[in-house]
Length: 263
Image (cartoon, rainbow, N blue to C red; front, side, top):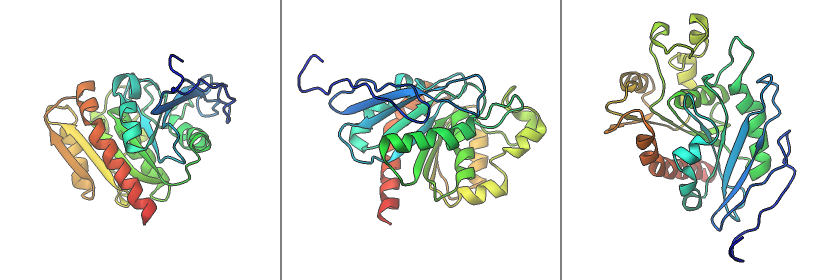
């Protein structure tokens, strides 16, 4: 390192099938990364990344789900979520999810179960955090965050941020490739009462730009889930909007998880 005051780069074996890699860390943020050995995505070894507050002890965990066409880098190279790690005291993690919309597909790929069954245990080992996690996602990942939270429930999930969430009120309106067919849409529809009843027990924040193509569906979802905090403000469906909201969103997550830990 250029300065003796900066933390050293350490190589370590990371468990749960990840590659042996601990990336460099600065004075405020420690980086870790690796690859998952997963049974839920045959033929793939998805990358994961984790940014932690340096020197932290069991920091609350935020799992970030990227949008369509993104990967594990999008949370950091695009949204710059690492800029808020030291201030909030949160550990922020991301993982590759391709364009599979974070649920089981006809192909056999199931990135949602990959996150809940394999990534989450690995991240808990890395952070030593045992409390409820938060999900934060945008576009496809906003939908995925609501979907996975509705499956895990309030004991496992303490907060959800879904921004510009890719939501549709009926199967015929969904984007090509988002679902295999009508049955797939209906099986993973976050508007379903069985899912909104679970989400009503979890703090949910919805942010969407006024010119975003998903704004009408986000408003409709907020009507279905009146406990959610909906903000519609200037902006569209783009990285500039998501990056501009990251600071306030992570501040909200930190305060929400802190309140739950103190409850």
